[in-house]
Length: 269
Length: 284
Image (cartoon, rainbow over all chains, first blue to last red; front, side):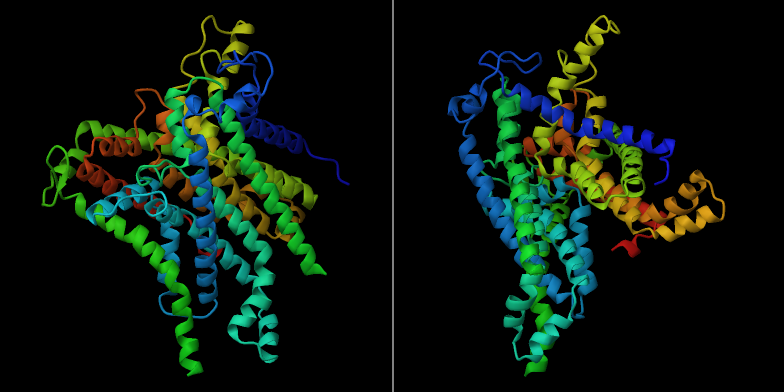
């Protein structure tokens, strides 16, 4: 093996600092959320306990966190399912030529380029002009889809680009119809990638703030609830809440990763 | 019968996605355009036609807000690029073990999957008046008084945004670099090019599309940004996004809409400018 050039060590150090920059603050709040009951918002740590993690579930401390969490969870699952269905259908359409394909492609991409605050304001105004009530499960859902579907669609396009059509042709030659070919041949092959798409859609929705901010209606999603707390909660309960939601996100990543591994393994057999 | 079905099928499959964007993107933006000409009677918006909302956008106060937003855009873009390029370069060209490469890349992306708001809150114990940095500086006797401008300042806003959005720069640049044919670099080495020449003449041009895609993401994210400005900025920090949000807070929808239209046009110009410099079609 070659001797490593000096630039390697220099860049490695830079990379290390970058990782510290990314994770340092997060680790700080993890630690601070494990303080004793007289903990404050800053170091040094005052005692060690799970007191503040428990406080998150006490309504008087931080408001109705559990309900907001449930809403975000349901919304995330809805967004996940819809993003998958919509983007896989569009991905299938893009494998054939059709008029308007370029238009739909740029329309989808443009959704990523339009500043989020416009989507939120626009949907808010549209609902108001039409005399509809905004709600996290109607206008909020729509706002989330404008953010998750483009990512899902781009990944699905990439997946189909690498997809070998001869499997489908074989299935058709054996007499399978379109539906059967999709569910028994195409779907199992793309399923591992779809787990990634699903995870991305879910977490983008679960953490989304700007696009939801003006259209969630009466009831807040979790990020909106947390945002509200930043102004009036001045105890480590705020950090504890941050720790819990971050751990939840990590759990989702791990579950998706295990699912991906399991599917890939089954495919190889 | 089968043939017509084959012809119609892609249209049916593409319909849901088209509907999502027509209903929740195009129609709302058209409504913003319409409402930006409406009047505001003190408590609600009334249909009508007036240009006074746009006149308000071009007053000195709001022009200064736009300038301040550009300042954030330029600074955040610069620092994201200054971080993302070396980090991606390190991952793509210095790490030979593929498994390690994937793991290190994932380490860079995991924070992106967690809540932006939590990530910003987590700067409080680090940057605050009694935070880690200040206690370190005080202990080393580098300063007499805690440094105040670390949090709730323009510095904190830029830092927060770089922290949130560097992922959008790293992912496309890393992707571009991974696609570079390693034989090109070997060929350049054989012809006697120095490390710096390879970087400038081979890697940089081939990474340009990735840089462009990352830049488009960062620029559009920062242009409409308001939570970071709210949470990390002081009273002085202003951005167009925050301005729009404040106007909505006081129910001045027509005014907010006019600002949104101008914001959209400015953003599209910036994106068009980036696309003129770099051709990204190969990447799509």
